[in-house]
Length: 250
Image (cartoon, rainbow, N blue to C red):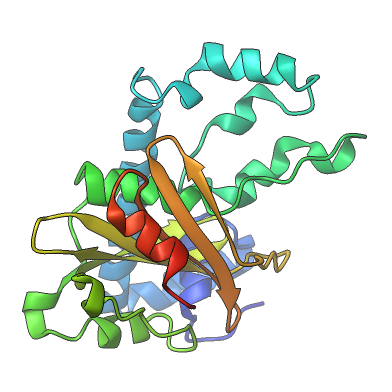
């Protein structure tokens, strides 16, 4: 049973319907007497619904062939049916943890989920498409690190990209199956954007080695530290991708 008052992770578990009936009733009783916290929880619930709806629509578009059902079926056949076709349905609200149900762990041929897929999808939805508004903008009071510390006080500091011409401009909270996540968007004077993404490693404590990968038009640099997983995401055809890959040390 959770303790009162509920912590950040307890509230996200409530939003994600992961609490027992007893714990859910406790949280609901607490929210009934705490209007400010209740408003934040309602905002998270609304975000999760918007993300699911947005991604559901995005997956029906032909713009990203990697997510086209026909391409998924072909890829599954080429890989000797090692994965379920549904494993390629990339959702943030049902992120890597949900995709962990690829059933690969129970199959003879095991293939690990691609790291930080949720970070790359978040970049597409927020930095590229602008589907969700920012929870925080630097113009509010200029302290992006302070905003992030309110939710991830033990996480690593935001990377300082000033020398490369990038400054943090906005932040967004997200709810994933691994737990609460946050994405900070950086922008240069030309309007090019890169993102910093942080979330917990999930119930199975899946920490990441330092690495990088591409997915369509995006490049991600990822790593773990201080009990969290991180990713820096940028378009792969810009100087920012090479800058993140070759010069930044996390």
